[in-house]
Length: 274
Image 1 (cartoon, rainbow, N blue to C red):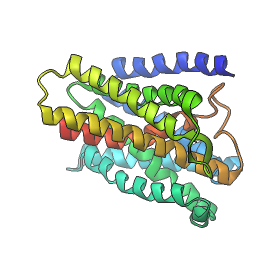
Image 2: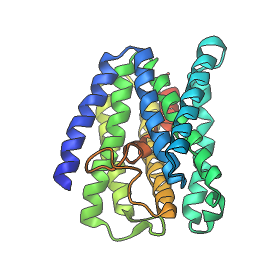
Image 3: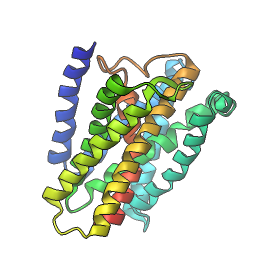
């Protein structure tokens, strides 16, 4: 299982980096949009809709919403960043849901409510990545974000295996521990510091402090993204969002952390770099 997981990751990571470095903004938006639409298709199953027509309908609704957001950004004064930042309010609500589970099941008892929760989770991922792709150093900041999330995943795995005793949210995800959170956070903060050291010379002490603090926050909120999907899977009684990716489950199982981390990383970009 671990070998399959590693082999799949060795395909997915270079593919993502190739799209970051080689695709122009419009094609990059289309690529991420396709990932989001597949994620919406999987989300319908998480919400309890197993009929193919409903799942395809959710995918079409998401694709149409992406089209409307694209039009808003290109034809009005609204910016990608303005559309992205409101999603942080959603993640405050998700935090309450996770730590109130199983009492919070009352909020997702109706399948249509669970289904529509996909929009504030998935759309800001697409919006936020478009924000970053539009920056002067787009390749750098997008690579930075991926390293933060991937580093957190790797650090959490090994720290959790070695030191994981105290459970993080046992009613939602029994396998996650506080040691994993700290390990992931430490790994990503070190990676963030290295990226800044080599590629952002001249940061002031205040900017350095903000960079490290907000990097830790990015990792913390990425854990929340993972936990929220775990909540939905536990409520639904399934292990993975789908079986599209060998050893990893579905698309949602790979992007859940990124969905939450991307808007926070946009804040990091706004505060520290711009």
